Image (cartoon, rainbow, N blue to C red):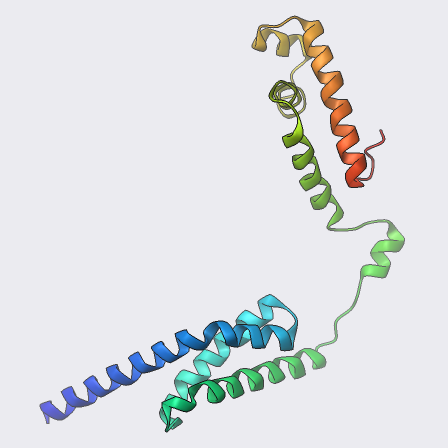
Length: 180
């Protein structure tokens, strides 16, 4: 009786290892399949995960491990179909027209911030320093001059050229409000 339990445990471990090996070999292709069907990376990840769980639950029903790939693909496809059906039942509303009319784009601010970071990265080190001290630490030009050990006129000049460079870079990138 104890020997039977050990034998069963060994067989389960062997079958589990076989499942892990096969699933690992086919997981990337299954994700690509789900992504092609669903068109959304997050949904594809979820569907692939759900399919993997279903495959594990029904692993004992697969008689020929050589047929794992088509068997698992079928599970992935069915999982994707269920997601599509579920999403079709859940109405979604497109707010893009309302946002466009209102003049608000929820992603524009993040994009502008990214463009600002790129523009700042293009500045010389001296210009980056004065921009950071002036606009991130909110120091006056005189305070910046003291911290850098340079005349206030040098700080004024660096700020002038740095702001000009930022303005040009942001205008080239199409950032709104860069003309101010």
